Image (cartoon, rainbow, N blue to C red):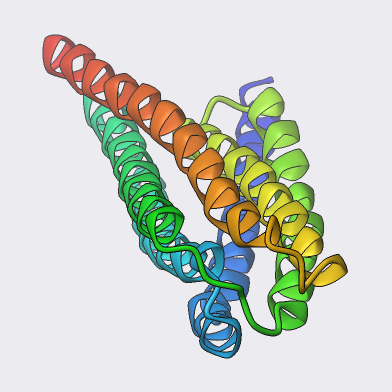
Length: 222
């Protein structure tokens, strides 16, 4: 019975590791591709989106390193919790930094509205982000239900946020592409950026506080 449980845990761990590595590799080129799209359009939403993707990439990398550390045999439960809390802190910090950048860019562009340039490339990138990140969100949610790995739970929260943010960016850029010459589109871009920022700030603060609580609980166990 114990051997069967060990095999199940090993399968879940391998599955989680493959998913984390895949998400890391797919996220790696995203900041560069997004900044190229932002340069061609001058869109505040896309500039902020590039900053968001960059901080999220660092958070995913940190989570992958932490996951590798948690795989070590005979790791004390307190250390596992501490590492989970560290992952939550990284994800929370990434969301807070991303939200702050997007809010700043949105306010700046709202005070000085300009018409965005060609946003088709950015729209395609954001739409593909909805599909890809949505798939990872569902996959991490399934694995979180199967096992108890806290790092994978933080990835579920991150990819839920990434999916919803990409959806907001897609809608904002679609409005710009469909009505490029209208004065109202000057405000769609910064307002879309600010709406996404508020979501990231709220969720980032919640995740950051959760990480601090997990760290405290780990200290008590240790």
